[in-house]
Length: 560
Image 1 (cartoon, rainbow, N blue to C red):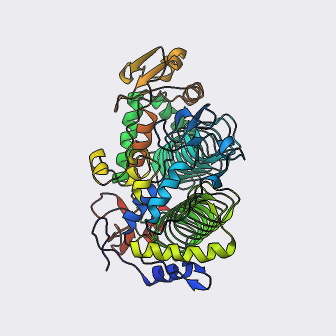
Image 2: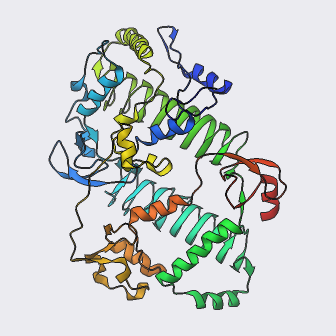
């Protein structure tokens, strides 16, 4: 069993892994360039890719082409050249002008880093949207703010991963199938008026509900199917239910906090949890895997086939070690790829085919070690070659990389365009600044300027009920009760709280996001026993956790 060269733990490389690596090893001029086995364990490989992704943080800065103030995922002190989206996609600059000859006396990664620092990067990925300039990795939205991975949605705020016509939602994660008027919801399919809920489908008017399907008018419930008028899983008549809720609402901030704590306890101590959460998935391992088959150790992914070690992916086939990839095939060690075919060791590329070690390349094919190219082919380090020259040179570079130990590795974490504390890696693999710096991992010390407001008030000064919040709170900033970071309430957000009766939050949006992430399961599997039949199971709940975790058969028997 090999040992991870980063954390020194042993990990398995299976025969299926080796078969995949053989399958995707590029054949150039009739010779296969074999990709070696991984040198890092799954966690360290994932950490390296996650460190290359800033999904949520956005900053005001200047466009390095026009000097115009823009919104960007890169802070003002970033070492990179950042162009506004419409400039970056235009013909006003030429990425080929940065082309370099490959120097066989130096490491490839060193030369690529120099190119990466010179070629302009796009400020955000935010396409065909209206009034949604503070969204990233998103498209086709209207009236959205400080949200990411949002597609075809409207009136979405402080939310990540919302797709398919979701509307009027705040502080949520993973919304699908037109979920509407949701707050603090994690995984919802087609639900309406849902508040503080997890894993709900086609539910309506529900509060503090976990793992409920086709339920309506329920409060503090779990594992219910096709129920109405339930409180703490107890059945009420319609009149009784309304009378009980009249005793609860409207909620003050303190009361909401009390019920939320009860909800977390009920999930941990009473609710039944499936060993893994998957739907219409066969011959697969992992968690949160939907409509997939023949997948191993895949998480938060859907419509997958013959994939291994994939996270946050959709409509992918024959791929391994990828993160945030969609509508793609034959991917290995890639991050942020869309509509790709046969991409190896790439970051942030769209509509690419037969590319290796590329960053921010679009609509291109047969590239090696390029950055920022659009509609190009047969280029190395952004220099144009003929097809014959390209196919003669790339094998020589690969042989050079093999001698150094670079071939087969994703880009070094030290080359990430973001500070570790700005990346998604910190959510799953937290590091203190001192640890990161000691390991040569970039860290951002940038601090955004304080908001320009009439005054900053402590969260404890906020009235407990929404009816007592004055309009001029829109001219103030609130100091987070956890971090002391000031944050603003925007008008559509205030309108949402007034419409739903929710109190104004007392925590910074970043802290609210971290609170949601802190209660989700890790992307890791353990062996433990079914809580009912004691059959061995593989689950994302570690053996030392107190939750009631059932095998699939026992879980289905209990909830149906």
